[in-house]
Amino acid sequence: MPPSVPPKFVDVRSARSGQGFVNVIGVVADALPKALSSGSSFMVTFTIKDSDFDGESWDGLKIKYFNNKEDRVPDVQQHDVILLRNLRVRPFQQALIGVASQYDNVAWAIFRQGSDSRFSPPIYSPGSAEPTFQEKAYANSLLNALGGLRARRSPLNTSKPQVTAAQTSSRSSTSLSTRNKFSLIKDVSPQTFADLIVLVVKTFPESGKFLLYVTDYTVNKSLFNYHDSVADEEDQNLEGDEYGYISRPKKRWQGPFGQMTLQVALWEPHSYFAQKNVKENDILLLSNVHIKFGREHGRLDASIHTDRRYPDKICVKVVDQYDEPRVKELLKRKREYWKRVRADSAQATKDFGDSREGPQECTKKGKKRRREQQQKKETKRDEDQAEIGTSFRVHRNEPNKNVKAQHPGIPPRSLLDILTNESHDNVSPDGIAYKLPFQNIYYKATVCVIDFFPPNLVDFAVACNPEYAMLSDSDSDDNGEDSDSSDGSSPVLSRSRSRRRRIWEWRFCLLVEDAKPAPPSQPKERLKLFVSGNDAVHLLKLDAVDLRKDEARLRDLREKLFIIWGNLEELKRSSSGSCVDRKQQQALPFTCCIKEYGVKCLEHAHSDATMTDEQKGHECRFGWERKFAMFGTTILWQ
Image (cartoon, rainbow, N blue to C red; front, side, top):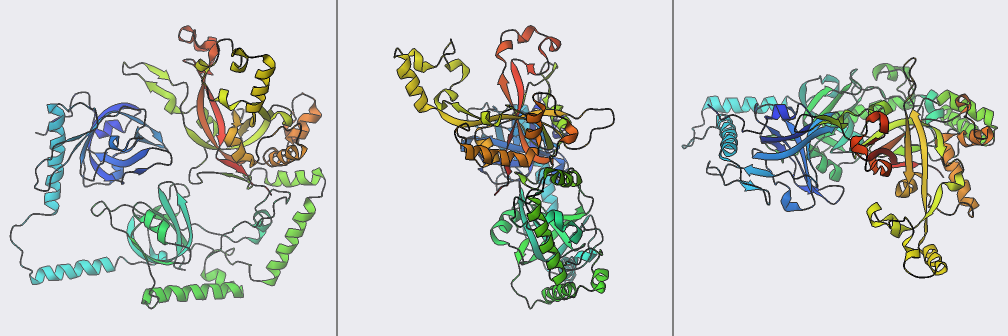
């Protein structure tokens, strides 16, 4: 009978079923090489299981381990057994994963089977205690179970087997079966694997993976339908605001149009290879492509995961031999498709899918229409506000194309989801439920600006002393005065030195609400977003100055902010301090990145533990107040 889970440990299934801190032991089902994170830490990502080793790796617990010191990050390999103490399980992209940060004390031990089938001595994290006898016994039992499975897969024979005719026939049959995995996009179906010869239409890097948009110029009605709608060109032809301030052309979908393009997500090591070697219009051989229905849009897409048996195997190959028969057929279909598109024939739309697929790019009529649309946008810059307001009302539910947020692969969340994030609910080791005052979490949301502070734009930039800004509250003087005036020197000299050290910094706040309509009889959620420092410079692409002395910079700031809040400033000025009529506001919603953080509540610092939520409000818990700031967002403007 195999040993049970050691005391104070849980199995993997229990660990991935809820949030909190756990001790867990499991087999490494897959692992990425140790690497530097986007910051200063080393990191490793791996998945552990303690059962069903022959199943898929996504049934296990995914773990991300970070530390600034490389020797403190476990150098795990596939089929290792790893012990982890005090691992925190938390939500990440709508899934629960284990996270060991730089500030967590997550001890580990690695158990590994040697080349002679004997167990190697365990590898411990620096300064950690040696595992107990029960913990070692359980880890070794997992190694034994894994070794038995691998032995059944590949029996060890001391004598060289004779190759019989039956075996030769079997090998030939296997080879033929592999070759028969080749498929055209029109013939693929969900929950199957296929080999594809395709042309790269577009590439897109995303967090942890690399997206390819590929085609072989065959139609599959289960694919996403890419349009080239002339009716939409007025909205999409320019990547600028609704009034034509920005005339830079937007990169549009270049075809093929209709249901011909398959999105393929590449994971390591395929993603790294593709980023370095694959570009648009390359012809690729993609092997072992997993066809499935996408979670977001319900259409067919595909992925190529890490091979569990051969983790270094690359299933992406750039084809440079155009005389191969299947490549020739692909190129013939491509030539025929674009020939029909250029002819703009009705037969082309029937053969290649939706009636809106045929592009109008090459027709004289289409070029004339685009020139007329460009002239309309040029004229719109000089029209009165009423006409501009009409344009806003037509498109007010569409996100502003002139505001770009980082991390395009992460979907936006509603403000309600952000404000009621369940990851703040926690349970102590004693079983006491409590709510964390804040967490350092990043979000994305689509919002509308409904107010701002300070009310005067000239106050959006403030003078500050960077030396004092670096000091914590405990480092400042008890009386709150500048240290310049407390060093024994004269006040005049102190003020002179203080002025020499002062710089200008952006510091303002936006009141935003959800862009989507609220349910009946319910108000929209609102959120205060603070914008300051480098995050504000990234948003505005302007350095802070004394706006009372620099009228040109103030004018640029006003035009920039007009893109995200429309006529809000004008309405606030005309209202003379009273509430702004929201029905008159003309502003497009936009998508932005939001970070949550905490600041100390000085007024509650000494009494927080004895006050109730009703007395102190929900803004301040355990002496901390939850705040939100905008980051990673840019207003496009020329």
